[in-house]
Picture 1 (tube, rainbow, N blue to C red):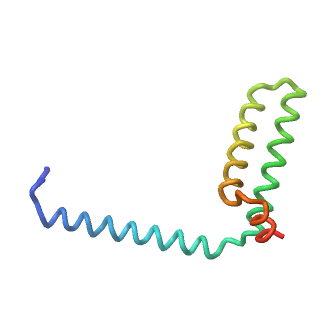
Picture 2: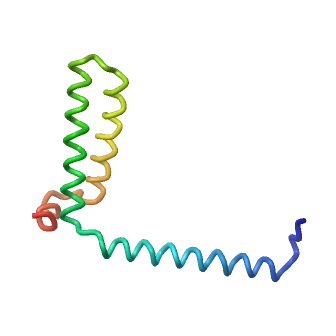
Picture 3: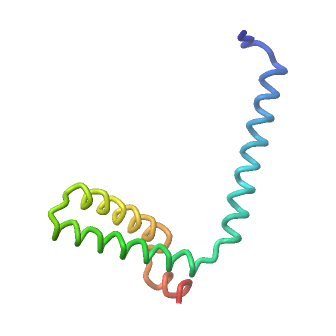
Length: 96
C-alpha cells in the first residue's frame, strides 16, 4: 500500500527521522566526550607500525596479497591520523 498524499504519515516519518538524527548526534557527542585522546593516538600509532612491519615482511617474502592488504591499512591509518592532527604542533600539544 502506498499513500503519497497521506499528510499524517509524512509528518510521522519526518518526526521519526528527526528523532533518529537527534539520537545519532547525541551518541556521537557522548562518544567524543569519552574517548581519551592520548590512548587513541597511541593505539593508532601501534596499528600503523604493525601494518608497516607487515608490509616489509610481505616484500621480503614476496607475498603480494599481504602487501596490498597492509598498504591499504597504512594508507587508511595515515589519512585518519592526518585528518585529526594535520599540524605537528597540535599533535604534540594534545598527545605529549
